[in-house]
Length: 415
Ligand SMILES: Cc1cc2nc3c(=O)[nH]c(=O)nc-3n(C[C@H](O)[C@H](O)[C@H](O)COP(=O)(O)OP(=O)(O)OC[C@H]3O[C@@H](n4cnc5c(N)ncnc54)[C@H](O)[C@@H]3O)c2cc1C
Image (cartoon, rainbow, N blue to C red; front, side, top):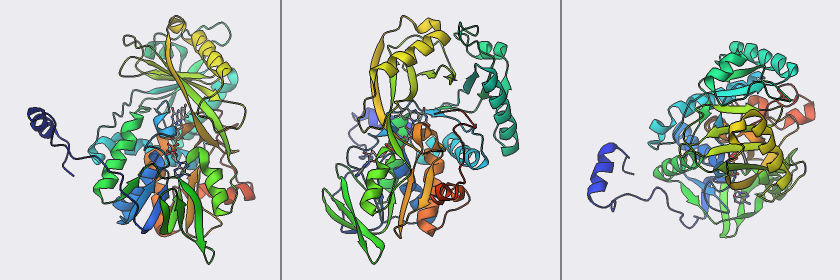
């Protein structure tokens, strides 16, 4: 595939953009592949990409029931950070964040990574203690974060009301190299690179069953017919339990709606990402000027990509307390995605009870940031049949052994 460059742009500009290659096509499936990846979200596409790049496995199909990137990958608020508490989490999220730093160059596709800095506000004494502890843990893990004062918070983000009526800002956990990226571009960039390696990305093709022979996976039944494979990678976020059931095993996952909204565009007023976990809302400003806003998950399990109205009200109310400046903004759009929650709020990158079938899920409300690192670790697991150091702690067996990687109560953070 021809490289994107300033020269290519100039050349195509002169001939009415008639010479660009298609970034990827959606071919009819072949009868057999070495690896079938189910789910063309960021994690599935990144898995395929690193299978090809790191292990030379290129006879790969990525199968998607809808359109590429139409799941949570195209619905999230794009926060990227790696300031997690536990060592295995910090390792995989920091690997991911560092891959983001050069992802545009690597994929020859502008993913618009913007390391503008992420701050997580401490608005109770409990959060102050928790974030100071995380900053210390991050120092030991080699993740650059610091606990900053309320004055520094105000300096970095002047529109914050630090003496709020209910919860004044007492400081923040600040990661200067955290930020955002363009979510669609991450999916499109990986898809283009996979297609360039000769992989098939098959859209509008729903997996309806998992085929087995002699206790091993042998293929998948899809809306476009049966497709054989030696290895199967299930990477379907909110639908992990559904696919697992097809494979004859159960997952410790709950699927829940999580929603986000954007305001009308306004002039630049905020060049960092702010997360306020006590009042529960987070906000950043997109390049178009919209305020991108997210809140918490709904309190029930569902597969509707919508979310409930009262959550919008609660999230907006919480953010108005923190940013009174947004009180008169009109909200333009609201949407939802289905996130896959585990009990310890850590992901699963694992073999399954079905031989040669692997699963990657449980990223919950915070998996966009993990896409490159997760794809890297999953590709290693699928290629070798054994997890490498990044994935080793995230096996399914931890739920049986009670060896949780607690990023929930202990870390007290989301997204
Ligand atoms: C509103 C919202 C805000 C978020 N904010 C952030 C954030 O700020 N930062 C962050 O890091 N994370 C965030 N997340 C989480 C993040 O979006 C997800 O963790 C991540 O995108 C999951 O990616 P994925 O590739 O695993 O899943 P998806 O992108 O959902 O891809 C899975 C794909 O599998 C397909 N599929 C499902 N079933 C089948 C089937 N039977 N056959 C074929 N294909 C199938 C789906 O159609 C889908 O395209 C947010 C999520 C939401 C919903």
